[in-house]
Length: 234
Image 1 (tube, rainbow, N blue to C red):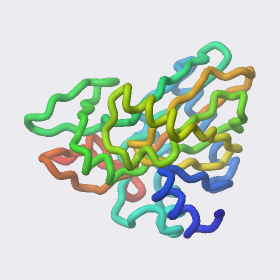
Image 2: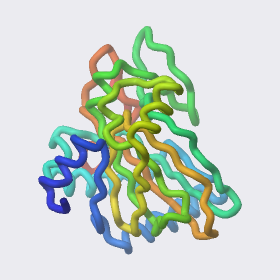
Image 3: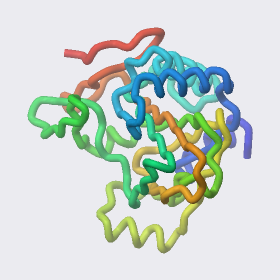
Image 4: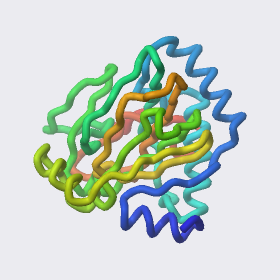
């Protein structure tokens, strides 16, 4: 299934869907050069939504995904993270779900990451979110691509033993991609990645989209709804 309806069905059933060639190479090359200048040899950052080119990409992503019926028109971008896997910074990620969000709220314990609060919200909040992974480089099978457990986003929050059991029962899908491809995934989808076997660079911009207002007294740290980032609601 490669049309818009097919992507919607895949996202609902499997928790992930690859949209090929969604963004032009020249835009991604410009973003990569700008981030290299800003971050140097750092392997990544989670607070890039305020970067002008990342904000521009967020706006473009929203327009394209809304047009395909993959994102609600009220959605806002709330985070942009760079993952930069290189021969000198060749890391792996164990099987997990993304259960922390860049937000804060009265009475909810927060962890500070890169100077910003992150909380673990109730499951209804996590189920309302969509992660959008933009590939700045080609990512083949030897480049440490994401591996996901299809359908695991429907299982709720899982502890370590439950996650391993679900992977054993359902197996993994390897999510290779070309530059400009976009991988959509639900945050509760179990995922992991191995170290790259090849020396090629593998950069991914990981955006998080959600509703502009949050329940449970929570507020986003930052939002991009249109052309410019907005400060945290108070």
